[in-house]
Every structure is written in structure tokens, then in C-alpha cells.
Length: 321
Ligand code: ATP
Ligand code: MG
Image (tube, rainbow, N blue to C red; front, side, top):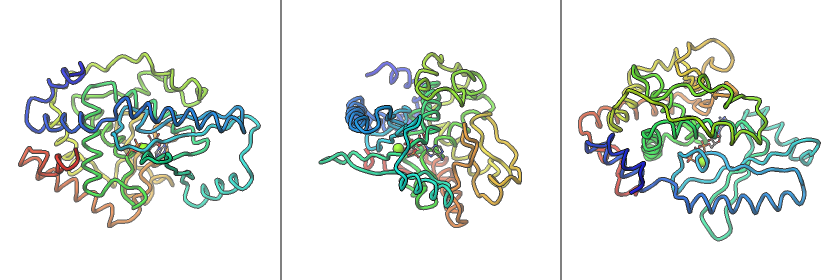
């Protein structure tokens, strides 16, 4: 049993928390999964460097931030800099897509003969910065990783974790969990951008970003809530306390900001601030029916779990493991 699991037991003395640890240990990304992704990244980078010598390929997203599952895809960011330009047609496509949907174009492919999926973007370097910010939060307290893994599985199972279908991206869900842990009366997490501004300087050279937060010590919280208490508290916070029409989630400031009438927040159902670019990462939720489905899921799951205190009442654990 790894040492971290031993200490995690302190937060898992009740049945619900034990189930959360069990799900986490069965589903979390293994070293062998990461090694395989890293080998693919290195091979691909070599091939690309034959054409663009100064190109760099970065593994981002849940593969790198400590919040990955065995089944997670591998997100990649190709950084082309200096006077290396993309082909004209690709550049035009990028610009057009930005204008229309303000989304990042993605190249999706699979490793030959396997089910390992890759999502590659070009020059969306904010994804590298926020990957290492999320990684620092993931390791700031032992409870963060199991908590987020269970929330992701719960959201996926209940069909509210798919930005392409107008619900929440995994990235949005992660920021929602961090915000909840930051704003408890007795916080489980601080604002790392406030406490360590030099580690998360938004204009830091991209090559330095992975090194930036290497020496941040774990956060010492006086909050000793179990995993189950935190999970029920998370559902309750978004089911009853959070004011969707008046508040913006800011992990950067570790608080809810008042919703202004600025273009970024006006007429948006859900407002979650990107910690570096400060735009809305939840803009995919643009239909009232999907917004209502999300709120209903929080309320229903909160009601059931509060009564039953059994993870299986809202998520079939055996089927997922
Ligand atoms: P999963 O395990 O489900 O794949 P994930 O943590 O990889 O989850 P995604 O929503 O797939 O999360 O996003 C992958 C990465 O892309 C994020 O970690 C983040 O670095 C970046 N990203 C996603 N959405 C945004 C956004 N709106 N703005 C900036 N970066 C984003
Ligand atoms: Mg991913």
C-alpha cells in the first residue's frame, strides 16, 4: 500500500469515504499509463522536429496534472515559436475558428492499434500554464485527487460532463471543486496564485512553467473533514448555496466574484474564470435545458447521498471499476 494511501485512510473512516478511496485507487492513472503517453509524445516530437526544428510538444491536461484516470485521453500542446509559421491554410482555419466559436481547434488521433486517444492543439499555451497550476492544487492536500476523480466519474455517469453536448468540461468541473475547497469556512485549499505569484507568473517563459511550482510545500489545513463529508458538501454547495445568476467562480482569487455586466459574463448560465486568461471556461453551457439538467443533478444527488451515505446510490461503483 503506497504511503499516501495510508495517510488517506485518516479521511476515510466512514463507508462513503472508503468507497471514494476504493474508486480512486482502482481508476487513477498508473505510472505505466503515463510512461506510454510520454513515449508517444517523445516520438511525435522527434518527427515534428524534422520539419520544425524548434517545435516542442507538451503533455497537458489530466495526464500531467495528477487528476487523470486510466481511461483519460492524452492532451498535447504543440508549441511553434519564433519565425516558424504554420501553413497558411492551417493559420486561416485557426483564425476563423477563433472568430466563430472562440474555441481552440483540436487534432484528434489514436495510437495505432490501441485505444489511447490524443487531442493536440497548436500554441494554446495557457493549457500548459493551467496544467501545472492544477497539478499544484492536486498535490496540495491528499483529499483533492480522490475528490476530483469521484466528481468526474459522477458527472460523466450522469451525463453532465461533455462540453461538446453543452454540459461541463472536465476542466470546468475541476475548477468548481477547487473553488468549493477554497471557500469553506475552514478552507482545504488556498489561492496558490496569490500565495506563490512568482511560480505562476502568467508571462513566464513556457519552457520554465513545468519547473515553476516544483517546490511548493503541501498546504496545512485545519479542516479535517472526511472525503465523504467534502463530497456531500460539494453537492450541497452547488445545489443550494452558490448563486449562479450573481456569482463568478474565481480559483485565482479563492472566492466568488460578483457577476458584472461585462461581455464575458453577461447572459451566461455558468461563469467560471480561467485562472490565467480570465475568460469563461463554462461557455459551452449555453442552453437553459442543459443548465437546468446540471442543477437538477446536483440537487438530486445531494438529496440521495445525504440520506443514504452510500456512493452506489448515485454511482454504480462496481460497474465503473
Ligand atoms: P479528462 O480526464 O476528462 O480528459 P482533463 O483534465 O484532461 O479531463 P479537459 O477538459 O479534457 O480536462 O481539458 C484538458 C486540458 O485542456 C485542461 O487540463 C486544460 O489544461 C486545458 N483546457 C481545457 N479547457 C480549457 C479552457 N476553456 N481554457 C484554457 N484551458 C483549457
Ligand atoms: Mg483530457
